[in-house]
Image (cartoon, rainbow, N blue to C red):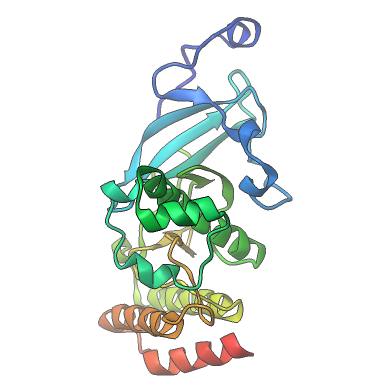
Length: 279
């Protein structure tokens, strides 16, 4: 991938008024509040310098509710302060179709009365609140799971309807493949299944279910499985559909691995996870 800063003179950026170029903006990190930044200690690769630029490098994934872009956050002239990020941007509800979203939001609370009223009335502001709520829900879930040691991308920050997180892939911008896209042998599949089950155990022990787990929102990078797409994560106890969604996760995962000749029992896995969630 070409260097997006190759044509910039570092000295002029620091000592003159220079506007960001096409596809660029000044870093949004300084404007983020402490609750909108990822858990500390921040990984060494997180760029916190206010002089950094965010450069959009392309799109990684399109979806019904959000698109994911590849972003480089870097301080011009300082190669040590550079990081690739995944920028997930949620659409407002009028431009999205989050599948059965009410199932996932039962048991969640809206912090501000004004927002709750706007959501109920489905005003233009309410639609933006809804998109921001999904973004913040995913950011909070990533923070909680990162702190628990679960294999998720590190959540860098959230800003409105955008979640910035660790890019899972190679330095040249090639994203890690989804589990469903990986060519694998029998040994690899058994190892991947064991990793997915460990992940589900971590979630259940913390009282959560992914809610939409499948081989399409699990990435494989350097033989390690990482889970993505977490806005719909549900509290197994607080959400009336929590156990049903946990059961669906078990069935979806076991069905996929069974089709790939890995022996697994969705009902036995579900029973184990329910017991773990109530332990």
